[in-house]
Length: 314
Image (cartoon, rainbow, N blue to C red; front, top):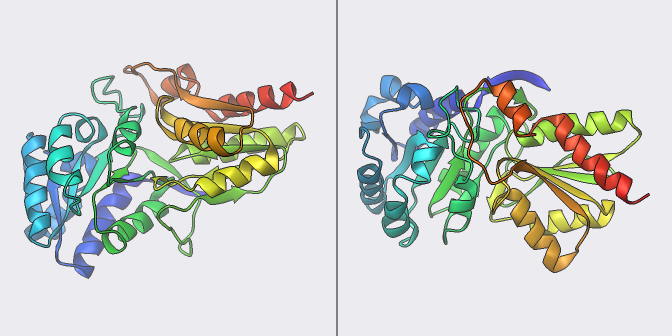
């Protein structure tokens, strides 16, 4: 794994890059540009930056209007606000008419810089996954953020939700990586069990696979950067190969990645599985390491869930 870089930094840098490539790309910010790094656009391409204030519902309506005029608006706000405060406007004026608005939910999950449960969003994947017409992308690292943003501008013509995290994270992809909407990525081959992750949890799945290897187990690691559309065939293939599945997400277990995998396997190839994620609870304010340990999201928790499945077959 390469040096760490924050997804939000990649977001700001890539917005400038996209605007230079396509002047119709614009950014609407909910008074959080210094946190989301949309301030890169405010300072470098101010004619494409619109400060909307703390008025997320209005911001979504303005973005919808811009999309009807041929612009490609990126919404810059926190996941907690994108998935909840403006949700009726998302549903009525963006998703139902299928407008090309890219809603970026920064500060997702529980690692939000001690902002506490009010600013943490651990239900956003479920909310946007359940909304018709919506593409849902959850990148693992800064490289994938950039690749995904280009794909969301160039390859789709409808609404999308892009889930981003706050703090620097290891880089697992290089510049040659090809991101494809709706396609899973095998990060590591294995035979004994499949670890299926999304976002940063896919990186922790790789570390969990290392822990399992120390005990003689071979773990396949499958990264799901797109939750919708969902690569069902990749999940089925992983289950058929290994016979055991563990999912990992910084998100509630209800309706997120684990739910999507369980739905696919339940209908197509049932196997024993465990889901690692938040157990239907809100988060709280604390240092990241403490939160990750309390809510059992670390690599050793993923490895422990895998070992329980592996031991059950003996």
